[in-house]
Image (cartoon, rainbow over all chains, first blue to last red; front, side):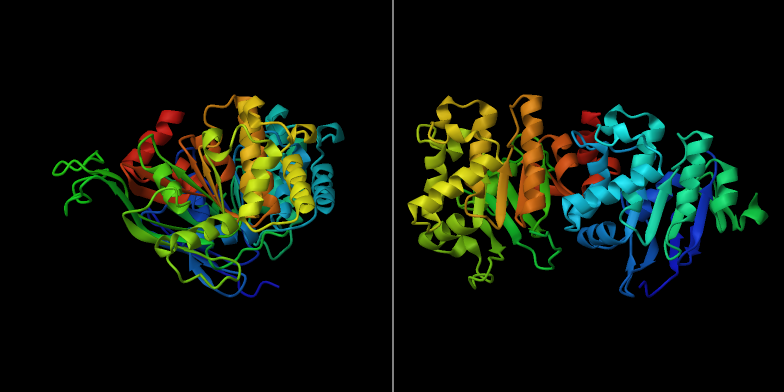
Length: 225
Length: 285
């Protein structure tokens, strides 16, 4: 289905690396070391000042995420690249199941099918069923974070960017999320920021270490940790 | 209807400029955000907007933000032929009428009316501008349908009922004049009227400004529903960044009649590039 692998990211403050298709790259480093900024540049929520980030798309095309047009970015956000923010950007007046179903509705999938799929994710993420039709603004941090992850996974993205997806989770919920991320389609490339090194050991193929807004190292978890 | 990503813009605007007054050759050069003014010091002309260039895709909501007097409304009023631009061009990709290549500002008045009646919808901040408040809600919609070429009274009535239902106006009030309605209801009748001709481009000028928060919320939800169920390109004018954040994926920031920044809405809000946008974003939080 996906033709090309290999994404190369090179850029600001001497950060250069490439990620192969299907690989899980973890980014670690202390707070303020530039991890989130790096990830947001990949999603174009932040604009990079210099450098390039080459994304090898579904159709075999290569686009530079730093210079692509807004419409090109919106198209790959809709179809290929997912982003899980640290905090759920709550969509007001929308119940949890619809928050998760929304990306499918955008693709033209019917409301019933989209809600079925969304409910499946809620169940797998162990969100209590009586919360499915509640507003996520009333949820705990950990519940919101799982809704956020479900909203990203339901798109079946080719590239998934994760900004501390387990930071608000207790050990049991963390294990559920780690299990789900491990179970994601092997063609999905993931780049994630983590503080919990045991999660990094479980998930990552390679690790980038950020320090003082520069890249301080890259290697396998065995080499780095 | 499935919103499909189409490659051709529904609307392209090139160098739209509106100047009030006698105009001199230096009006544009002497105004704008770098000068912090929109009045030309040489001749006193007001440059409401200048060199405005953008495009909107079918199914997309483009946000235009800026403070009062930044030229936001001027842009949509020119596009709706409510006022005549001084310079510039706009091209509408109308479904199959062959006028794609025509600069709509150069059409004759009859052609302009046809474009407006068949392809545009407009919602003004003030319902008085978009509605005849003493004509029934159903009559207001019928007026737009008649202009768009509808002739069968029964079909006009059915369509009116459908649109009012969609905008959550109780059907029993279809034959009542909007003057008796609350502000939020008047705005929903305006939206129903704007949707009547199934427009290719929907212009929304501060449509929730001045309404109670709970009323605003329902109107914004209605716009979201319209985005899901139609392929209309929408231009959303507002000074409220919360509205932009909720509805539009791309945003243009205006200052003193010029575009100072264009980008993805999350980028505009989280990593604003222009000094003015930074000020705007920081003023909210």
